[in-house]
Structures are given as C-alpha cells and as structure tokens.
Image 1 (spheres, rainbow, N blue to C red):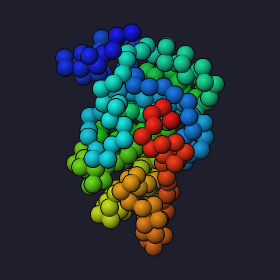
Image 2: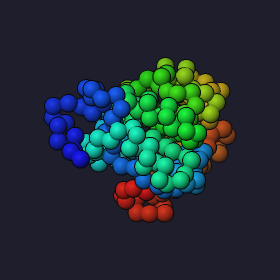
Image 3: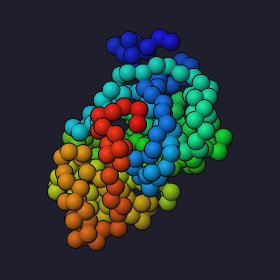
Image 4: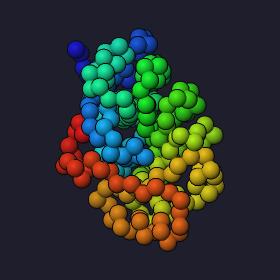
Length: 233
C-alpha cells in the first residue's frame, strides 16, 4: 500500500481526499486504556495521521505525517479482529480528517463503545452523539492555548470528558478559571493530568485537594506499564 505521506508536500491528509471511505491511519493496536474514566480497560486504538497544532510536550509527533490510507471497511475489519468492544479514535487530531465521521457512525452502528480524543481546536458539533468525546483543551505551557475553540463546550454531553494537561502552576490556575468561566463541571466530568516528566504528580494532587476541586486526577498508566516512548501501547 502506498504511503500517502510521500504526497504530504502536495496535500494535507483529510482535506482533499476524493474517496469519502478512506482515512490516513498511523496505527491500530490493542492495549490497555491509559487515561480517562475508562482507564484500565482493554481498548482498541485507531490513531489517525496529522495534527493541526503543535503542543510543546507532544508525545505522538510520529503521527504528524506517518501513515497509510485505509478504507473504512478495512479499518473495521482490523478493529473486529481484536474482539474488544471499547474503541478510541485518536491522533494526531482525528477530527482533521472529515471521513472520521463515517468511521464513528459505523462503529456505533456495530455497538462498539466509541471514544474520540480531540485537542479542542476543531468543531465537535458534528460528532455522532453516541460517541463519548474527550476534549483536551490546551493549557498555557502547551503553547497552543489560543487554538482552543471554546464553543465546543456548548456541544458537550454528560457522557463526555474535558481534559487539562498541567505542566505548571500557571496551567493549573488557568484551568480552574476556564472551568469556572465556562461552567464545564456542570456539563461533564473534568480530568486533570500532569505533563509527563515536567510536573510531579503529587504536586497536582496537592493542589486539587487544597482547592477541593471536583475533578478526576489521572496518570498516563501506559507510560508506567511500558517505556514512556514506546509506540503501539
């Protein structure tokens, strides 16, 4: 199968694809869910290629351009092979490729529990309502704070989750303010985690407890089970 990233200089994946049944896929793998309220559960991950933002702490830069075109039928066949009903669509930025909506719909139609993790910079209003959105709004230390699309809060459901990745005290204080300004806790659950290797988890836990925040603290469990840089886990 040809590598479409060889053509990246001429087009960006997902913008000019004529075939509405094709996605550019970085990897599909079966692992343990390392984050969110589903942490610890077996999960199939479908990682899409390309991202429209560049966070300072990004741990999946390999997904910016590496990938191969796959039909939605072939993706579904691969997902079925793992015999696991929890599926997360991630990236990169999965919403950058419009054809992801067909994939989400078909997974839901086959009664998978579907999660999508998105960076919060692209419109989530068209996401199938059966899909659980995990919206990772970007804090100041990411360098991408200005890319947050706050109207996405209007489309959050109770089953969705908002994530803040905290690298500094400034990030934490900013996140508290955003939670208040947009009444996010009234819309859905809020997750907080640390930038791996930048902030000690105990520090964030202390801040949460001191402020009596009603948020879920989380670690990236996969980075403690396997080497932090390992792919496909």
